Image 1 (cartoon, one colour):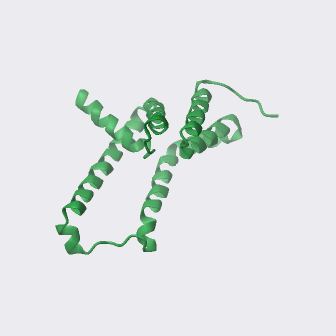
Image 2 (cartoon, one colour):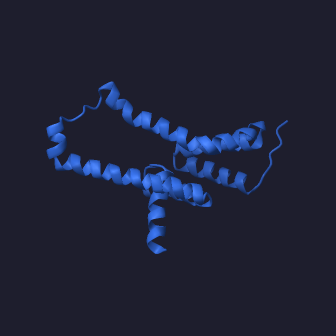
Image 3 (spheres, rainbow, N blue to C red):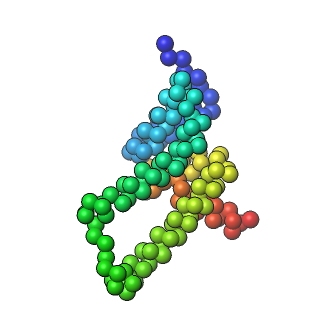
Length: 153
């Protein structure tokens, strides 16, 4: 028999599931469902491992997804001359560097202030549900938040 243990975290996960369903954000819905199941079952013993390694594994999977069109030939690498002379490609490289730097700040913020993650997730879901946004992930949002907090402090 299943014995549901309701606490604040379970409530937050249920809210995220509902918001994920409303906003058609399957990543948040699936993630929150898996974590709720883990929290409510013997799988809770694996949560410390997920906490330690989950973000790193997720970044690896995301990187594989981003690089796979290049490896499959769907996206072709530009010639070196074009890479060095095309202002759009140079701007894309600069933006990529900036976003990677923001992501690094986001990981640091999420590690140092994990309570902010819930707010970032809720904000992301609201942006998707009501402002036709796309869930690009909490790392960049956390990086932008960290940058804002650095400026304010």
